[in-house]
Structures are given as C-alpha cells and as structure tokens.
Image 1 (cartoon, rainbow, N blue to C red):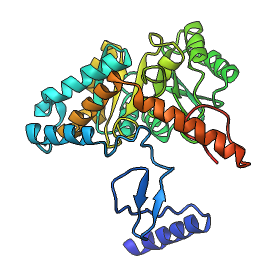
Image 2: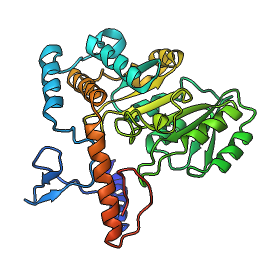
Image 3: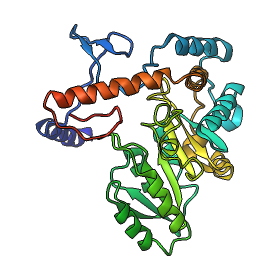
Image 4: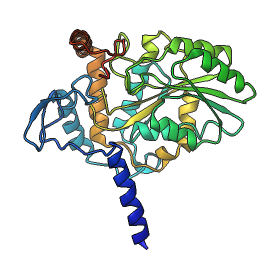
Length: 328
C-alpha cells in the first residue's frame, strides 16, 4: 500500500529540491550564541537566530531553569486543568500580565499553539476576521480552524484594512489580526492607526508580538508600548522562544473574560501538557531581568544601528527601519 504513496512523496521531495526549497538542518556543536560551531568544524558568526537579547545561554537564565528543574521536577505529565498547574505557572502568568499591561494571561506549549487556539473559541460564523496578508503561518492556520468570515488586507495598508472593515460591516464581532513585527522584513505594524480603525468600526485588535516582546518599546513590552496604545489592544499573543530566553512556550494575554473562556475552550490549551517547570521558571527570571534594567535592549539597539549603517555603507540596499530583522 505504501508503494504508491512512496513514489508520490519521492517526486514531491525531488520537486522541492529542484525548486531550491529543500531545507537542510545545520547541526550545531555548541550552545546557541554569537559564535557557533557546526558539524563541519567551522566556527561562524550567527546572524540568523531569534536570540535577540542573547539570553539563550545566559548564566542567570540557566540558573533559574536549573532551580525550577530541581524544585518542581522535569515535567507535569498532565494538562493544566487536571493536575498540571504549579505555583510557578501562575506566577509566570501574573508576571506576564503585569509586564504586558493586561488583565490576565494563559500559557501555551508554543506561540503556534496560542495562535492556533485563540480564534475558534471566540468567533463563530457570524463574526469576521480581518487579517494582514503577511501574518505568520500560525495565524493563517488558526484562522482556518475558525468558522468566522475571512477578509485579508494588503500588508500594513490602512486604506485596504478600512475597505475590508467596511466589507465586514454586517458581522456580529470583527477582529483585526496582525503581526506586531513582520518576520521576513522587520517592518513594525502601524498599530496606532490599526487601533484608530478598530475604534471607528467597532473591531477587536489581536497582535502577535513574537518578534517584539522583550525589546520593542521603552520598557520592552512590545509594539503596543512602542505606539502608545497599551490600553487599546484586546489580545496579545507572543512567544518565549525568541527574546525571552529562546526555549519554547508562548502565551495569550488580554482581557480577563477572554482569557477565562480560552481556559475553558481553547483546544491546544486543554489537550496539551503543561509548559515544563524549567521553562516557566526561566522565563519568569527573564521578565524580572528585563524589568530591572534596559542594558540588554540598549545593547541590541546599538548593535542593530551599527549593522544597518555598516551594511548600507558596504553598498547593500535594505528595508529602512529600526528592527534587528534586516533582510539583505
């Protein structure tokens, strides 16, 4: 039976290779960092990780993970609502809510799970999602799992967003969904203008701030701080797998009632094991570090400016901006 499928898969894989899209995994022989070694024996400068603040192998973060490992154990072997919630999980949720300026927060195994589980519990077939065309794949998949009407607007284009909001005028609830920072080009969303349109057309706003949490904004809270709309964004999804230590895990943060309903009906939350204690404890330490000092963010900004200026001086044309993502 597999023979026919095998032939099909082999042909598909060959086509991927011919199109230059086959992904080979680079095997590292060192911790994640500025300098890494591969199995080819080369030591190279690392320009491609999402380790924005260099916390992947920070001794303070590793010590916090080690402490949580021995205090709380290796894993939970349970979903949250049975016997998979420890004090460290609640402490992290409270700290994230405080840091992001929201009422409540719910943890997920990944930001992909968070985006996959946020829409279906909140929006039915009488509702509408208005989504940026360059949103992350996890948002696209999450929207597909939802019965709401779907509208897609041109990337960061407020005129087209307004047109789509008008098209969705008959919906019971409307939700604008956007990345805070678009991961392929480093463009920061015009979130203040998005919120203005949301107010005008009575829409909710959801922002995936995975490439902003921890280092965008004066205190690193994200694009809602950067654009001074802290109290105008309804839902924030983000990851712990980039600036916040680079391990795994994610969350949804927002209004209390939204988070409470997600605890009852969000399937990735209900049917996935709890976030490991070590990641929870380490992420808690990361938030504490970012609250205490701006040193890491200041260094990142300095490095970003230096690279952007240097790469342009070398004759390369890049997308203008201030974000560390710099496509060359």
